[in-house]
Image (cartoon, rainbow, N blue to C red; front, side, top):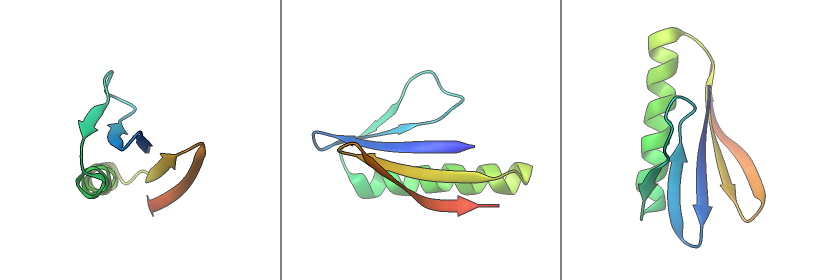
Length: 67
């Protein structure tokens, strides 16, 4: 599972592949912590790979990966 964390104009949002709408945050730290928790719980519950990708200004990095 890939959970995307996007920053656009200082607004953060978490995009979960199973949710139709993004989850909005004003604070990047809280958004990152939320995305990391989702990935960790997915891996713990299913044993399947889960990662968080941070995207900003057209660049991205896979910040965390479980499994």
